[in-house]
Image 1: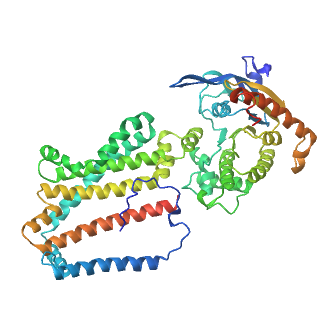
Image 2 (image 1 turned 180 degrees about the vertical axis):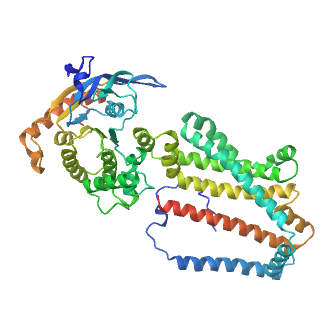
Image 3 (image 1 turned 180 degrees about the horizontal axis):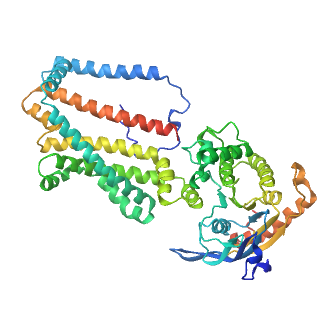
Length: 275
Length: 266
């Protein structure tokens, strides 16, 4: 990651580049440094997951790429352009339900396009394709209230994909789902990603999920956080169902677990994870 | 007719009819039964007491007041005061409630004040309003506005706070401008709460106009009822009470139906 420490970003044209980014929040209790000094690059078409102990600033990192939080130090750039606010070519998916419950599934998926001023015919057309892609055909006229948690998250994913983002930002998107749904929708996400080939920055607590989905896993340290290690996931793609059972998968999982454990113990106290 | 005291409860998800199926026809039959029972009890009471006018006599007195046109000035005055007062309360109360709900600081400062003001009998301020506006529709409308503004503020603030906190974040990430954020996120997300505010605000405006008319007015149904009472014109008094009940009932039912529809679609 030392290659991004240079000030010039010209050679980073198709990358998402974190340049010594940091975030300090001012609260009543004083200044809290959430993110200390993160540098790294998400190359074009790569799926990057970020794991780390709770409260280590993973979501903060994501919000800074999404342009909804301004870093107090350093910068993020996408394809050579500095991120100064929300961009049209990034889209976010959140952990909890963020569907608009008064709109139909179709109108939810088309929402981002509607804001961008895309005509009704075009946006409905695109929304329908995204609904197909996430496997919700036949539910276009349903309201989110009539859907399960997993289906609502697919609506949110379809809404994010509909704006054809160059960078997809996912903040523990499956965190609120049960284990079964989670694995299923994870596989679906890979299938979709393999077709759209955009960059994904994926925040998760789940090490298995991170290994299964990613090209790279960034392990963040306890707060104030830095990227402690970047682990290259050298598992072949596409990754069929048995991938979890591969010895290499187990190795990577254990390696990551050891890294995370050290950081979690820093936050929670030694031995905290043995209980 | 609902004496819905959970008026300020924030509408949660839409399962108020949870599971139990009740046929609309049977519901309506029972509603009619209750209504008929009310009139039967009224008729019975009028038969055993000289202080109660019979339903028939009351309707006739009311019909006569409409026939000779003497009631229109009063009806107009009351409705005028209610509508103007309510509109002022809405124009002031919705934005204030919105800001109090959105801002932590304003919420901390104003929540106890608004809750306290909501609990005081605001009609006690009517003498001051009379000093300011003089006897007339102005004072009645001001009374209605002062009374209705608090429930509107409280339900709006509660509605803002009940909004899924991810939605403002979504709005920012999709670069919605402030107007779009309000019209495409806040207002639809809060629609049921806003309707509660409108419905409660409307009834409270109505109640306070009538009370204010009891005190001092140049015209109004409250004044007319009080005058009928003074002249021991029982049929007219009961007729007016029935008319006022009907207006409140119909108005509320319409708003209630809109609210129910909004909840069903959310």
